[in-house]
Image (tube, rainbow over all chains, first blue to last red):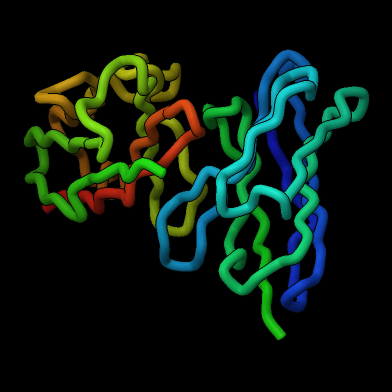
Length: 115
Length: 109
């Protein structure tokens, strides 16, 4: 069974940084692209970033390009999202998903950007 | 960036049929947009129902089907059940990235 467990969310001040992790199990992690999708409170879904199976191709939404960095450690079956220069509008639940376009979703981790 | 449009809300009677649509500001939606459909129950993570226009996952009930209809992607629910009441999102692929629609709140009443 595919399982995705996000961690690393929390409260951070505007301009601060946070690193999200997603521990994957139940599939051959390095064979699949992965992605992050976020959902602001009471709002819809926003695709944030994706990465190829080997990690050699990365993709970003315009709203986070230059501030967020996606990466992966295939030896540890873990996906990361480094978030810098955080803004209030980055406040959201961040979901990790199997596939550059999500096929299986984690339960999400809440990131709150506030002073 | 392209804008993906969905009906804000729809209502269907139990056992009835309803079609949700997904349009693109750039023109007709085609199979080259690889339309996806997602369901999100209140307070839960989304789950993927349909990929690449019309393919169901193993967990997707057969009453859900995907297609292209009148220049849009479409999700048809045939024989609605109370548990189908949820928010539904589509996603389209563009050369510049991937964009979700704003979602359709489906009420089964």
